[in-house]
Length: 167
Image 1 (cartoon, rainbow, N blue to C red):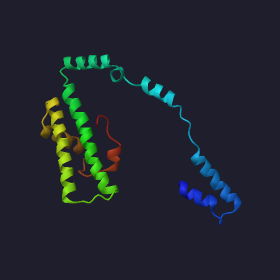
Image 2: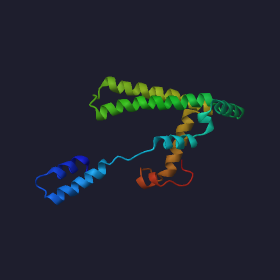
Image 3: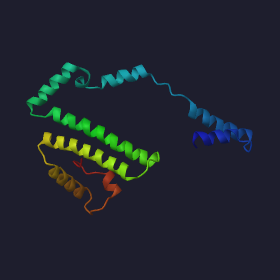
Image 4: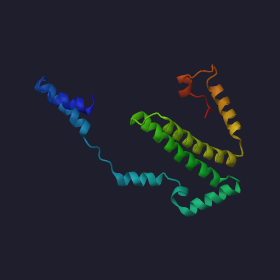
């Protein structure tokens, strides 16, 4: 039962005293506040965070290591942050249409397409950084999905139980 249903049952004159008390106890359990030691949590988060994420010099050193490996950090970081940001904007429009009553009209569909174009711009940045064409990425994706779904149709079991190496 959810909180509202428990409140109704705990206060219902149609339930006997014992039943109301049982529902009240369940409600009390639900409302018990969990004490979280936020200082301990922050210490834990800091302890499991890489040095490159906490220390500027370690971050710069890592970037220099990657540059020596000809890894285009600046291009791929631009792509990763940009795709995330633009996907968030795309998601925001979809959320408002589905959950907040924003109309499905030409203006909002155009806005979705524009945001999708922005996402593609950052996909192109990633492709440049990885020295791969968009066509090659799509082809790789098709091969991956063909191996995952050999019958050519979505299968929830295959989706959730992937073979080793299926990323």
